Image (cartoon, rainbow, N blue to C red; front, side):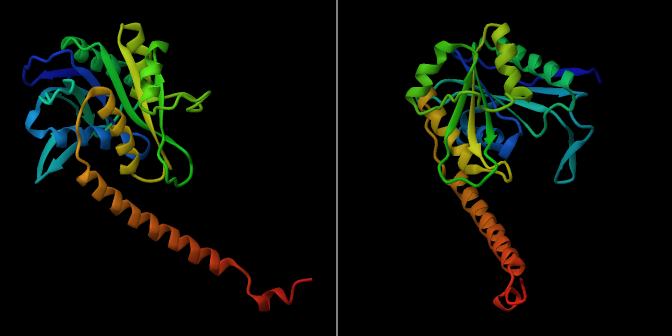
Length: 257
């Protein structure tokens, strides 16, 4: 196999599609969001490209005993309800090396260009380091002219945040996209960074609904969020018990000093 191979799975004609990236990252926010888009528009979705690369981990996925080589997939989505046509990039892995991130991002943009897409949305999470109740969406763009419309739908642009910049494909889609003439936006849902975060993914999808005139139901994502709430509750209970065990009793305190 060559270092990079792109399989032409099927051909469709799209009207000014928006390229949407949702690969694994902090809180799995981007991947959850992208997978939910494909679930919502299952009947309007077509797999158009598979991207294979030696930069992906050396493994296969196995479903029902049948293996398939690790790859990234690009699906064409034609909502048909007034919403924008989409090219949705999904996968289970990112590249393992710095060079690989550049190689794969260029390949992803090649696919976007092939379908005459000029607009990119990278989806991801930004870690807060603590559990949160209100999920803000933080934005970054590669052209200042894109800021105003995003602020109108609640996206926050914060000075020097995210700290350290945006790494991986999401960041490079902005940087390389700018050099290749794409208008690129990164939408990052706040998340603790500790757990898979469906609530953060929903916050990001709410923005996409407004910007791209899409229409989502959230039952399945809300169900996953409830499951994660149960997990968080159990973790918090374990922490409380641990703290109680470590606290000295009144009898212990009498012998101090």
